[in-house]
Image (cartoon, rainbow, N blue to C red; front, side, top):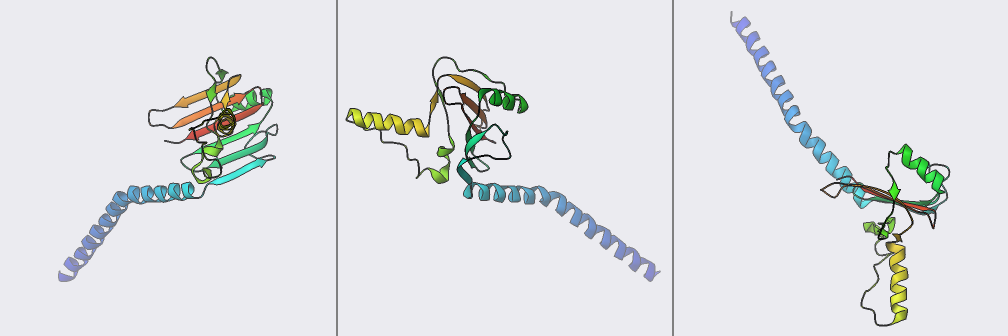
Length: 182
């Protein structure tokens, strides 16, 4: 009888340990996954993928050229030259609902706004005193944050700041895309 009781007690301990391990895994798995996600996002933000004036990339259509981009988890922006017909096809493929830019020119957040390259493209000083300084300021600002008057755009933004903005400049035949995941 003692042997049977000992055997039952071993099985009970085994079942209790197994249940505790399963409960720990169930409870800790979301925490572990959350930590892994946070580490991955932080690493991506600290190590952006950044290129300028690349002839072609495999994630854009063949008609896209002269591609510049900055990609991290939190901020992605890219721009490229493309004929309007190619842009419209890309918009349909990616389910972007484009419409004509009307009214004021649309401000574009370019890849130059990415955190790790801000030193290369500093915002110009706005305390200007001469016409020449004002002209230089306007030119620098147009490089960092171009404004598009004639073209197409698509924008979906969420209350938390996430979303996507796509702008196509007909004059320069250049597309600008900026997105955030939040």
